[in-house]
Length: 299
Image (cartoon, rainbow, N blue to C red; front, side, top):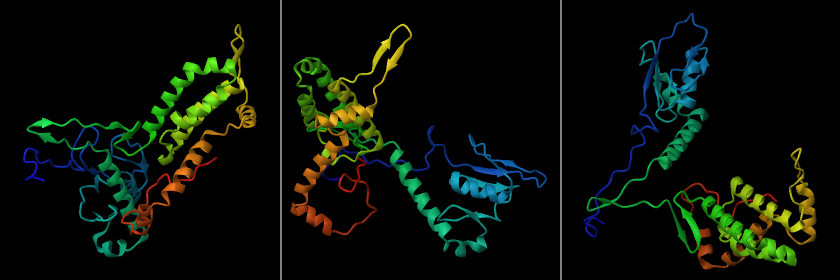
């Protein structure tokens, strides 16, 4: 690449332990321990935990401040950090400790935290002739919002905003003509759920879709939230259960039913493709992540 693009300067990825206002550099705390004291406060900033013994404090640092150093009364040799799980142990017990389940789980937790930290670090900046290239965290592709974190929340929010605008523009006219149900089904199939075939639906996304769906069902069934006594500010909120029961008579189902129906139709086509069979036959190199094909939708 260096020969093909000589104007692109080399860059160095940011270090996991580079000091920054959001992520300070690791520190070493030397605590003065007095046997007459009943409790000892954690020396880390913004941590208000109190521990009764030195072992409890070491265990606390292992679980909460595993990057920080800890010693008591200036003694830094009696206990050292395990290279795998970062727990303070006596050097003579290191080989036996590293064979324990505690060390294995601690190592897995440490690696997971390191991956999360690396994902939250600012991305490197690329330059061409000392001109920094603008980084785009989100962009639109074929009408769908793609984000750098590979989440579908941005696409879901944009679809809801577009569906709200279309519903607000024409719903009042359609209600007088009795055609609001058909128009809403068109919105659901073309605007609100555009691209939802491959969404990994999170709880937040489900709440947003259900909220918009419920609001539209109230307008269709004419069971609005209304003020019955403006003088005393009394409002009546019809039960959503009754709204859903009446909407079921109109063949309107919950929002997640439409997501599942679109997903099922797409999977029926995708499983017949040759590339799908080749992917299924390959060897997995990492842990499986949540995808639209293996996610269970609560209905």
